[in-house]
Length: 316
Image (cartoon, rainbow, N blue to C red; front, side):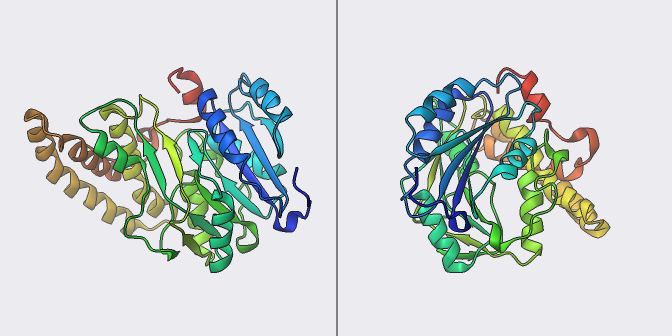
């Protein structure tokens, strides 16, 4: 336990989990060493499996944990549901987000907080290093697709944001909507994009540091062309959908036109590279599907990768 319970400077590490026992163990072990006993510290595990499969493990782990661990069972599947439930009980000023396929380096939390305070930031990010299973000829691309190294980024303020996993939020520097994460994204994802856009429009500062990192373990079914197609399609939908959310008709038309151009350029490159069995195929097919996503951004075309869809799919 920490020596102080001054939650005005405290940290709540939020760890949503869904049927990933090995990943949960790695993530938890990396979080319990983050407290330096100078501020209040807690770990909140939100188990989003309707069956509550992580409960026993977390209970046993908590018996020997040097920091307080809060277990929440959130049976209604959906990443927004899991994150909102954790925020509802979180005590800390600083919210550190880690996914159950990530492993934080030592001093991850303290480095993010130091960077956040230095720049008076609402959101703070650092590199994510992907660990890819197997030995596919596409592994180099998979690494670049899943990780965020930010090779050109210097420590300081950014103009854009990244995903929620491996990030820090300072609640004193932002005003959160209600609900914080949009439940409409429970199955499709993108809940962090919606929230972080909201924070950025408030004038919230976004900061970056290279002095800490996490590793992310990519599950085998994700390191495949099939999954790259689906995720690329979903990524492509993002800017068009955001323009539509803002009732920006010109923006919608612009992104759809860009999508048509991408498809026109990358479809022949995809076909030729596949015929030649060249490694470039995987990058071309990803860009083609991103273009398709910009065109077919609405309604039934939205891929469902999370929430109820994931609960029905034993692969997740």
